[in-house]
Length: 460
Image (cartoon, rainbow, N blue to C red):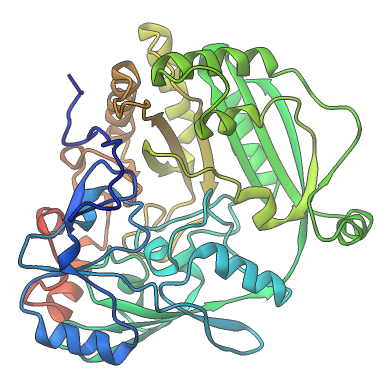
């Protein structure tokens, strides 16, 4: 029996390409019927669709979010904005992209221009720009925050078919930055850019004995820091990055702008831990042998070495594999005591660890509904991969449930695009501008066109 199938649905493993039903990316939820899907080619077509449709409207994006966020009823409309793609305009300090542009295209385009975003990328980059912004997608580094915090202008088609451009500095701009798709249909985003830079990432393994102070220090000392906590073995795998030297940059250019690995000697100190983690994952997923993309997310830690490259080459290295992913952000100032509580809870319960805990910290966000709003934030990430038959490790899900309880009790805010139990959160208490956001929504969409059961439960 699957633990809480509403929160953690089983995955359908048959080929859904020919289904009349339309599934989310993980194939664990039907979000509607293919007959409900519309693919406008222009903003004018989108305006006309909104004027002629009578039901509610949701945008699919890359369908990476849990199905509850995307799903609609049978009389409603689903939108595919993949035609809204590419660069619309640019100037010396910014680039305007169509909202459906995949992040990987945004990043490659900026790199070709010798530009980059101030925000560090998320782990994977198949999300659309608008979808990543709407859910508060982020990377790591205290000097930056979410992708949405790099927006200068956000263009939307509103419920009445009119077009509104939200401009940074306007009173309600912070509502539009992370909106969960509830204010209107984003068609274009202007992102501020900065000159292209290269980075060197130092990788090492260390005991988690002093993680409470180490995590904060790593993030204060380095421009970007990311860590994986192998709780069973009390070990950390850490990536700390700073700007590359002139010599490292020269080597990168000489290597056809590909990642440079430093040194002939690799560090094998994590190899035993990796082998144990892989054995656990094989048991949980019932996948035998070396196959399975999910295992590559761990094997890359074997025999590691320092590397140099651009920010996207270093940090946007995730492997898209169907999974239950829970990520909760807590104020950085509370993170040491929370780590101590997780250690104490683990020592008492010895829970089943399916995958290491992922730790990424960001600076404060300006977006009202960002999990990092007003606070430097540490995000605790947890993953349970699906087995080949679509099932999930019940022990792994138990761990997710218990650790979410702990983090929610500490004022944690869940990542909107991932899995969480909404019953654990008092939204007004953890989001100071919750009612201000609701007021903007009431003004822009009084008829609740951009809603569904999930949105209604949140805001109404």
